[in-house]
Length: 178
Image 1 (cartoon, helix red, strand yellow):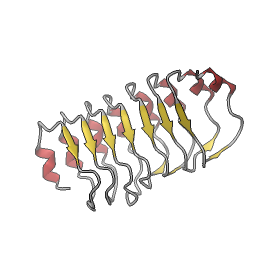
Image 2 (cartoon, helix red, strand yellow; image 1 turned 180 degrees about the horizontal axis):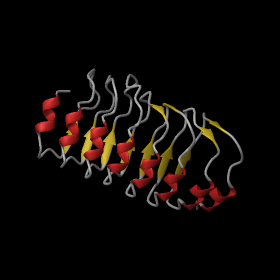
Image 3 (cartoon, one colour; image 1 turned 90 degrees about the horizontal axis):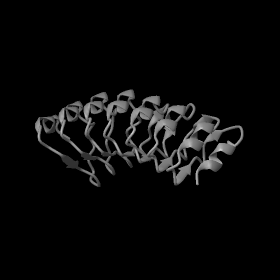
Protein backbone atom coordinates (compact mmCIF):
# COMPACT_ATOMS: atom_id res chain seq x y z
CA UNK A 1 0.00 0.00 0.00
CA UNK A 2 1.80 3.17 -1.10
CA UNK A 3 2.11 6.03 1.36
CA UNK A 4 1.07 8.39 -1.45
CA UNK A 5 -2.55 7.28 -0.95
CA UNK A 6 -2.44 9.69 2.00
CA UNK A 7 -2.40 12.54 -0.53
CA UNK A 8 -5.95 11.76 -1.75
CA UNK A 9 -7.54 14.36 0.50
CA UNK A 10 -11.05 14.04 -0.99
CA UNK A 11 -11.18 10.23 -0.78
CA UNK A 12 -14.30 9.01 1.04
CA UNK A 13 -13.90 5.25 0.62
CA UNK A 14 -10.92 2.92 0.28
CA UNK A 15 -11.52 -0.77 -0.32
CA UNK A 16 -8.47 -2.97 -0.79
CA UNK A 17 -9.93 -6.11 0.76
CA UNK A 18 -9.53 -9.73 -0.37
CA UNK A 19 -6.18 -9.36 -2.11
CA UNK A 20 -2.69 -10.59 -1.35
CA UNK A 21 -1.32 -7.25 -0.18
CA UNK A 22 1.72 -7.79 2.00
CA UNK A 23 2.89 -4.33 3.01
CA UNK A 24 2.50 -2.44 6.24
CA UNK A 25 -0.30 0.08 6.73
CA UNK A 26 1.08 3.53 5.85
CA UNK A 27 0.77 6.15 8.58
CA UNK A 28 -0.21 8.62 5.85
CA UNK A 29 -3.68 7.04 5.64
CA UNK A 30 -4.38 9.10 8.76
CA UNK A 31 -4.38 12.18 6.49
CA UNK A 32 -7.59 11.07 4.74
CA UNK A 33 -9.88 13.34 6.77
CA UNK A 34 -12.96 12.69 4.57
CA UNK A 35 -12.66 8.90 4.65
CA UNK A 36 -15.88 7.15 5.72
CA UNK A 37 -14.98 3.55 4.83
CA UNK A 38 -11.62 1.77 5.12
CA UNK A 39 -11.58 -1.89 4.09
CA UNK A 40 -8.14 -3.50 4.37
CA UNK A 41 -9.40 -6.94 5.39
CA UNK A 42 -8.38 -10.34 4.03
CA UNK A 43 -4.80 -9.49 3.07
CA UNK A 44 -1.32 -10.32 4.37
CA UNK A 45 -0.62 -6.95 5.97
CA UNK A 46 2.18 -6.75 8.53
CA UNK A 47 3.44 -4.37 11.18
CA UNK A 48 1.50 -2.11 13.49
CA UNK A 49 -1.87 -0.44 13.17
CA UNK A 50 -0.73 3.19 12.84
CA UNK A 51 -1.77 5.52 15.65
CA UNK A 52 -2.36 8.15 12.95
CA UNK A 53 -5.57 6.35 11.95
CA UNK A 54 -7.05 7.90 15.09
CA UNK A 55 -7.24 11.14 13.09
CA UNK A 56 -10.00 9.64 10.91
CA UNK A 57 -12.88 11.31 12.76
CA UNK A 58 -15.60 10.68 10.13
CA UNK A 59 -14.63 7.05 9.47
CA UNK A 60 -17.71 4.94 10.15
CA UNK A 61 -16.59 1.48 8.99
CA UNK A 62 -13.07 0.12 9.62
CA UNK A 63 -12.22 -3.44 8.58
CA UNK A 64 -8.84 -4.99 9.13
CA UNK A 65 -10.02 -8.54 9.76
CA UNK A 66 -8.26 -11.65 8.51
CA UNK A 67 -4.77 -10.16 8.41
CA UNK A 68 -3.11 -12.86 10.52
CA UNK A 69 0.41 -11.43 10.14
CA UNK A 70 -0.23 -8.09 11.85
CA UNK A 71 0.83 -9.00 15.43
CA UNK A 72 0.00 -5.44 16.46
CA UNK A 73 -1.45 -3.77 19.52
CA UNK A 74 -4.68 -1.82 19.11
CA UNK A 75 -3.55 1.80 19.40
CA UNK A 76 -5.24 3.87 22.11
CA UNK A 77 -5.79 6.57 19.49
CA UNK A 78 -8.60 4.42 18.11
CA UNK A 79 -10.70 6.19 20.75
CA UNK A 80 -10.47 9.37 18.64
CA UNK A 81 -12.35 7.81 15.70
CA UNK A 82 -15.60 9.30 16.97
CA UNK A 83 -17.64 8.56 13.82
CA UNK A 84 -16.93 4.82 13.99
CA UNK A 85 -20.00 2.55 13.87
CA UNK A 86 -18.47 -0.75 12.72
CA UNK A 87 -15.09 -2.04 13.92
CA UNK A 88 -13.83 -5.31 12.42
CA UNK A 89 -10.41 -6.24 13.82
CA UNK A 90 -11.04 -9.97 14.16
CA UNK A 91 -8.65 -12.76 13.18
CA UNK A 92 -5.67 -10.39 12.89
CA UNK A 93 -3.26 -11.76 15.53
CA UNK A 94 -3.70 -8.60 17.60
CA UNK A 95 -2.08 -8.66 21.04
CA UNK A 96 -2.22 -6.76 24.30
CA UNK A 97 -5.18 -5.12 25.97
CA UNK A 98 -8.41 -3.83 24.50
CA UNK A 99 -7.95 -0.06 24.88
CA UNK A 100 -10.41 1.49 27.32
CA UNK A 101 -10.58 4.44 24.89
CA UNK A 102 -12.95 2.37 22.72
CA UNK A 103 -15.54 3.44 25.30
CA UNK A 104 -15.33 6.96 23.79
CA UNK A 105 -16.83 5.76 20.50
CA UNK A 106 -20.46 6.50 21.28
CA UNK A 107 -21.67 5.65 17.75
CA UNK A 108 -20.31 2.09 17.77
CA UNK A 109 -22.86 -0.55 16.84
CA UNK A 110 -20.52 -3.50 16.21
CA UNK A 111 -17.20 -4.58 17.70
CA UNK A 112 -15.52 -7.66 16.21
CA UNK A 113 -12.31 -8.50 18.09
CA UNK A 114 -12.56 -12.30 18.09
CA UNK A 115 -9.78 -14.74 17.17
CA UNK A 116 -6.86 -12.60 18.33
CA UNK A 117 -4.32 -12.81 21.13
CA UNK A 118 -5.84 -10.08 23.28
CA UNK A 119 -5.07 -10.22 27.00
CA UNK A 120 -6.03 -8.43 30.22
CA UNK A 121 -9.57 -7.70 31.34
CA UNK A 122 -12.62 -6.53 29.42
CA UNK A 123 -12.65 -2.74 29.79
CA UNK A 124 -15.66 -1.56 31.81
CA UNK A 125 -15.69 1.58 29.62
CA UNK A 126 -17.48 -0.46 26.95
CA UNK A 127 -20.61 0.01 29.08
CA UNK A 128 -20.77 3.58 27.74
CA UNK A 129 -21.61 2.33 24.23
CA UNK A 130 -25.39 2.74 24.37
CA UNK A 131 -25.89 1.91 20.67
CA UNK A 132 -23.80 -1.28 20.75
CA UNK A 133 -25.62 -4.21 19.12
CA UNK A 134 -22.87 -6.81 18.55
CA UNK A 135 -19.86 -7.49 20.77
CA UNK A 136 -17.61 -10.37 19.72
CA UNK A 137 -14.65 -10.88 22.06
CA UNK A 138 -14.41 -14.67 21.82
CA UNK A 139 -11.29 -16.75 21.17
CA UNK A 140 -8.75 -14.51 22.92
CA UNK A 141 -6.89 -14.71 26.24
CA UNK A 142 -9.05 -12.25 28.18
CA UNK A 143 -8.99 -12.63 31.97
CA UNK A 144 -10.96 -11.38 34.94
CA UNK A 145 -14.71 -11.26 35.20
CA UNK A 146 -17.53 -10.12 32.96
CA UNK A 147 -18.40 -6.52 33.93
CA UNK A 148 -21.84 -6.39 35.55
CA UNK A 149 -22.28 -2.94 34.00
CA UNK A 150 -22.82 -4.64 30.64
CA UNK A 151 -26.40 -5.21 31.79
CA UNK A 152 -27.01 -1.58 30.79
CA UNK A 153 -26.25 -2.27 27.10
CA UNK A 154 -29.93 -2.60 26.22
CA UNK A 155 -29.35 -2.69 22.44
CA UNK A 156 -26.95 -5.62 22.63
CA UNK A 157 -28.28 -8.59 20.64
CA UNK A 158 -25.11 -10.74 20.47
CA UNK A 159 -22.38 -10.99 23.10
CA UNK A 160 -19.74 -13.70 22.53
CA UNK A 161 -17.08 -14.38 25.15
CA UNK A 162 -16.32 -18.08 24.66
CA UNK A 163 -12.74 -19.44 24.52
CA UNK A 164 -11.18 -16.93 26.92
CA UNK A 165 -9.80 -17.22 30.46
CA UNK A 166 -12.63 -15.45 32.24
CA UNK A 167 -13.43 -16.29 35.87
CA UNK A 168 -16.14 -15.60 38.41
CA UNK A 169 -19.87 -15.62 37.82
CA UNK A 170 -22.03 -14.47 34.97
CA UNK A 171 -23.47 -11.23 36.35
CA UNK A 172 -27.24 -11.40 36.91
CA UNK A 173 -27.44 -7.87 35.45
CA UNK A 174 -27.01 -9.44 32.01
CA UNK A 175 -30.60 -10.58 32.44
CA UNK A 176 -31.59 -6.98 31.71
CA UNK A 177 -30.59 -7.46 28.05
CA UNK A 178 -34.08 -8.10 26.70
